[in-house]
Image (cartoon, rainbow, N blue to C red; front, side, top):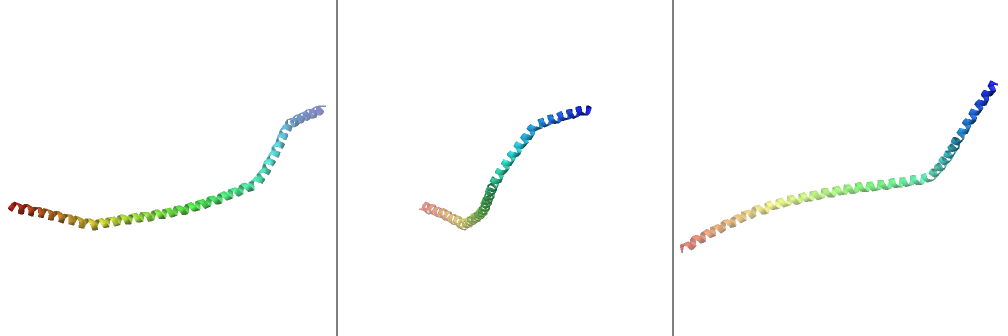
Length: 128
């Protein structure tokens, strides 16, 4: 009799456990079905997404390559402009030295001649 009561209690406990587990099992089954649907959707969409990613990557590589080439060309152009500006500055300095020295010498000579003529005229006109 004790064994029968023990079996009855164990049976009631197992039944209660099963009743509590049924909603969890139903929810687990729904979740598995939803995961299967999402997985199927991903399997359909993933190739297109990967193709788009590959195309975007290819486009970015092309853009970056072109950007590098343009930056190199811009660097070369900037270097060439700097060289030209340096050459112009050097030419201007040489021209200034070639023109300035004779010009100053000529102006000094003209000033000296002007003073000499003035002195001559002053003396010549004061004698009369």
